[in-house]
Length: 312
Image (tube, rainbow, N blue to C red; front, side):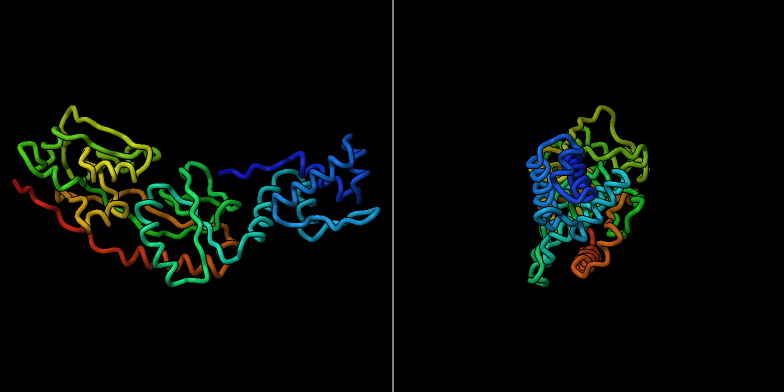
């Protein structure tokens, strides 16, 4: 989510700081004094900080107010970053806000967060989901978990984990006359895949898996796409089709038997999961606690279960 800045309000605030009062700012802007006062009040409420020390005849900026007014005076380029810093300071210092894709949050992160809560009772986690199509917004989250190639300019970036690709399905799809026995038997089933960002021919697709494993997919296959990876996984669990499994997202379902691997072929995905954050945020003790925990969780994942052969 991109920070939505109230530019008219910021302009009014800058005028009050520069001119030293609401009445002189109102004259310059051509609006009423009460309108200017309301602009400043709404900005303070929006940021969660007092920006002015109000006097009978003159008002002075607080330290945050002075910094913000200086950014406005220099132009709009640095306003978003300054507002992010002010809003971050106003947050509960015991809350960590994580931004990540909905499918990753649902399938991998949520099932593990109880362990973080038990190990860190003094901290709380808030999850905000987004598609990852826009740049990471430090104004909205302390840490972003991104799925991509690791190219995030201007941010601190740590590799969280890679992934393997392989088909997965419900155990019931191995049975019967049209049960899965080899890649050719996919012709009797629907291929499931999520609508992830395009990475061209190197993207983690069914075609990528087949090429990497020296296999040929049958012609005329039925396919179905879903907007989120957790929807793909649930559809596979329900027996709607065969999904291209992305290891971290399907590992729990494989370990508890809701899904199985019908084929032995596995390849490494070209895409990985990354931890991103603003450099100032990375110095926070609570952020370092979360980074250490989530990296340990990634390292502690169980081994990939082997393929399951068909049983009639």
